[in-house]
Length: 204
Length: 219
Image (cartoon, rainbow over all chains, first blue to last red; front, top):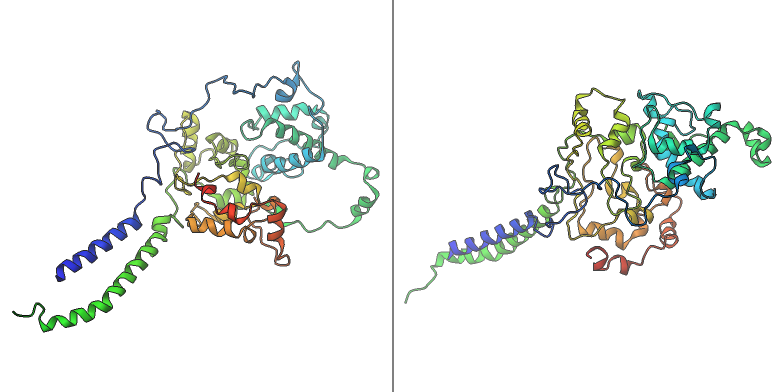
């Protein structure tokens, strides 16, 4: 009697502990979720790269100016869609994510990665870069230039244009004449600059 | 006919009245403790990765935005692990001979993916979408913890259903302004107690009945 009861208790305890400790099959189902490995393919990845020159329905890049920044081999000189405040805001956000690590928040080319030894890019505020057509910036983001790698995979075409537009805004910010600034903002020029916010300090 | 039980067994009946509830309570406690422990949930555990990648260095010290590498987090259900090309954007010129980065260079040379271990692994019967959480003002740090201070990434939270439901029942306690989602050092403003409720309304976050419906997450 005694041994039977203790046997029951022990087996109950064992079952409960086992149930608590194991992961059941439903947790890890035999299906591919993103980046799950695969025994089927030689390099072990379940996600397969597209066959070269594949075009998914609706993604044919037939607008040469929009997708290459060039027409007939020459950089285009205008944004291929209307410039709005939303485009510039988006450009600012994308610039700060993808470009500021090297080009820094002002475009002077003193970003954190440059300070850690990456080859310094030219400032956006030199005459040569202020005069290049806007398509040049799209082309460089898409294909890289000199030491700069391409950002084709990280930045979508429309965002590349938004960044290019924001680079133009940065250039304007460093070369505007005081007379061009609205009167209510002009007096701020003589005030001392505010303390940097937390976010800006983080990106210093 | 003699008695079945000897007089000495009386003590056993008395002890068992006390001992059985204690034992059952202990077992219940043990089950809960074990199933809530990091051993089962993975909370607080780091994994041995092929490269000792430090978010504390890249995010905390260098100030690189989450989205520089995790590019799909705003548009897709899955926040991608970056391809080796993204590492090489900088490491083609910085730390080019560091032994710690040899697996990265080998991966780039041989066009073979690095095999990272997933730290945050939800059960396969759960539907989770990063993009909707980001769009509705759930900060990275709300679920992933202070990644910018993690030399090796660990799972900050249990990822258990009760943890998910805590926010789905009270979103106003956790969400933040959209432009602060990727700010790892954002603090809830102390002088604006109504902010949560206001954001829930502004961002048109579904009512609790829909957020806690079974098929919202198990579909």
